[in-house]
Amino acid sequence: MYNLSCIDGHHFSSQQDVYVLDIQRLGAGLAAISSDQKLSLFNPARLGHGPIKSYPTSHGNLTCLKTFDWQNSIVCTAGENGEVSVWDMRESSKPQVAHFAVGTEFQNHMASVLLWDIRAGPTQRLQYDEVHSDDVTELRFHPSEPHILLSGSTDGLVNVYDTRISDEDEVVIQTLNQGSVHHASFLGNTEVYVLTHDEKLAVYSVAEDHGSGAALVDFGDARETLGCQYIANVTTKVDGSGAIVGAGSQDRQLFELVHLSRTADGGWGFDRANSVGLPGGHGEEIVRSFCFYDDEQVVFTAGEDGNVKAWRPN
Image 1 (tube, rainbow, N blue to C red):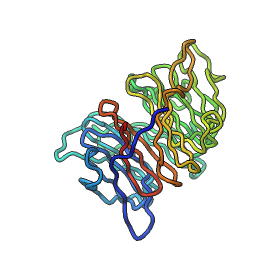
Image 2 (cartoon, rainbow, N blue to C red):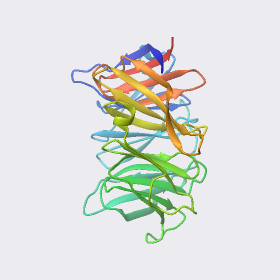
Image 3 (tube, rainbow, N blue to C red):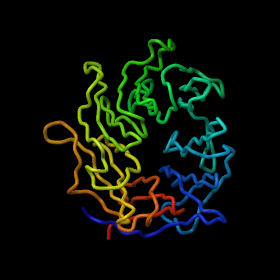
């Protein structure tokens, strides 16, 4: 393991404690949402100067930040009021062409997956009401096939859909059963990872010629495997080389980034020898989110201590 040093940061100050809930890399800078119900944009090279922009949101309880188009700096936010807001974080805006999907909490005996085509305005394109039996916690589009959608739920299921199909009885093309889903996403064209709320991590194949069922690799409780107290998130690499697992230890005040990558035999494993340590982390508080700029060799973290931090090699 080699260590990075904290070289810059910003603290969200308020009369009440503020958690930084998520951060996302954009072309225009670094976007963040915080428990004071704000969406902020930072210059990643000047965190200490504070946000370039900061917008109050109207979600009641802001819970979600997702990148819609990172190059054009379009993000979506959502919360407990049931609305999705689309934000252009640039100075100027232009029409966008794409789809996005939303999953709901379990209410009135339903947990729905909703899809829009933003070219058509606020009108829904599709709605699936019977694909999950509890809160939908994760949605991810396929990296190269935009009609393929993955969803995860606290009902323990990960579903893969062909959204060109409107018939709800036919739309699910793969189902995996791992446990209450915290995070899940595509690792490439044919494989996905699933991280459960009790920190169990596994990799599955969703290839057409591979039947649903057993995981390709089941790591069990990732806290035991990685020697940590919690898993903050798993972030897939844009070059398709796997993912980065963010592992935190409050007792040791350490946050570690571990590469989940292909092994020599074609499986998946943790590259512990080349893991990256962030000594001090966010103190005894939990790291909620992280992202990285490989070209600039900088990592950003956000935590329940109200800080956004930048880390570089010594």
